[in-house]
Image (tube, rainbow, N blue to C red; front, side):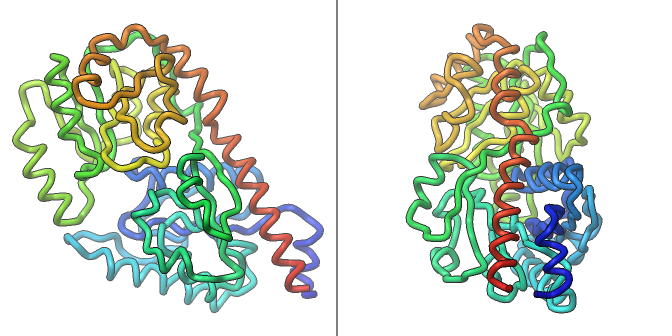
Length: 361
């Protein structure tokens, strides 16, 4: 056993490499939920005394050290080139520094396919529905690779994977989302502007309810996302429909805590919903389509309403005053804290690092 391995076996402080989605720089204003979870979790691990490094685009803002992998994408449809550059930069660094990390936590949705080329275990968090992943990547056998899910409904879809080690519900830094009981008279939709998230349905529901709606988020640099925005969203702006592009964190908080309700209109089988947790932490109820793990997050009739169509969503919006803002906050405090999430991932980390040391001894 090497001297470094002996030192690591006698203490719990770990050196962790986080791998981010490669497209854009990450910060507290990132629109993607996986990016926000990475930042929240990395901050928790750094606070706990672990050494954290994040592999992400140049200009990313992280709590520990940044391993910059290249410039963010500026032109449309450059994802594959950016991903190759991102992965190769990480692999090159690992080859030059094989003993720097105890484990790798992949939040990118794709780096895990290179697990066999990594000198340490790789934990890949599955943030997406199963249909979003290539089956050959999931089926690729590697003793260094394990997966985790982020909800019970998602875990059922991946139950046949032999290297699935468990489920960790997402969490948020609750203290960053101030509670407010009094609300203004607008509905809010917040997230990535794309067809599967369906902000056009939020516009339709708000119009049926006779309420103004604010759409806030980001159009990622994919041509089909831009085409969707130009076709379905841009013509509806004005007359009670506002759009806020790439908002600052303070703007996001202001919108969340003052909204009458948050609308979740996704057509995908959602595996979690970070924005629902954030809204409820602010005391803002959630009106959500019944998709995937949403019923695990939103308590129907207590912290919002889960609906099956736009007519039900519009009706619920008109009756949202039945929801107690304090109940929304309490649910997040009890179930979706960053502290709880960090502790659960910390348990996985210690187990993976210990198993790796034993195997290498």
